[in-house]
Image (tube, rainbow, N blue to C red; front, side):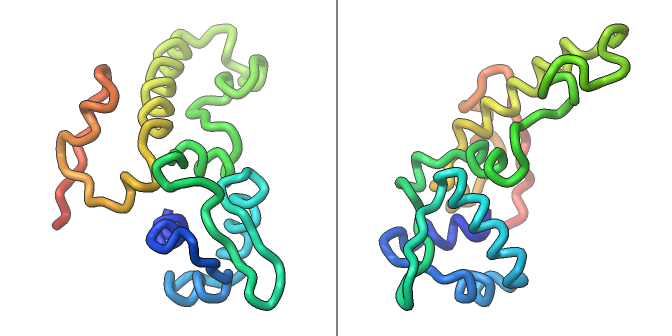
Length: 143
């Protein structure tokens, strides 16, 4: 998220991996890998050349946190049976998978509604509860 909020702060400008690594205090190989994954997923676009770099592929308000997580980690799932049936040895006898699927759907729904633009603002307690009627998340106010 750190890289994306930096890109969103100057959306028309091209940002090099080196510059993003430096201003974010992250290692260049890590930044390069993340940028590559986000570019492959269509979250970012890249421009080659001496004055090339990366920028958001669409407005920050149209890029969800779930888009970012999925680009980096793959499909969002809290339990193996959510990814594909048969991946868990306990699936047939699990009495909790229905509950996990409900929880997962609520969390993924919230992440899908939360955008990069939202992440640029400080979140306060109660802000997320209106985004998902069945899930109210308390965010600690660290400010």
